[in-house]
Length: 108
Image (cartoon, rainbow, N blue to C red; front, side, top):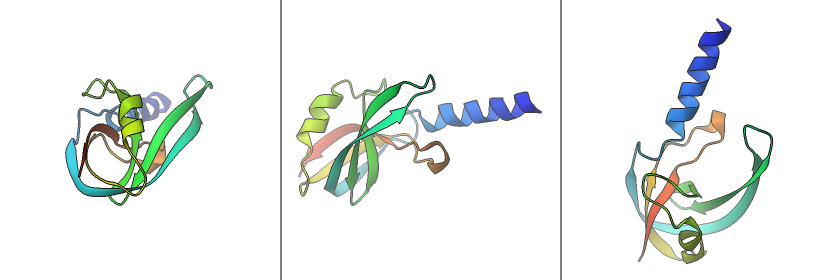
């Protein structure tokens, strides 16, 4: 039973964090805030997460094999109060504190 629970949890965490899934464009999103959030990873080490809050939802800005290799440039491009079309991948899963990942940004 314990192994089954562990397997289900691991599978859900892997699927929820995959930016290849659920890719979509969010149109006319106004950036409300940009935050650096510090979280512990699986090994207990602190990691910095760049999170952007918009009128379309909250998203993580991080590197992804699904297409965003310039996450710092993307992060710097976003400005509070400005409007963008934002392409994201992944899901928002509250239980795992996971957010969709920003893959591309287009200024309006």
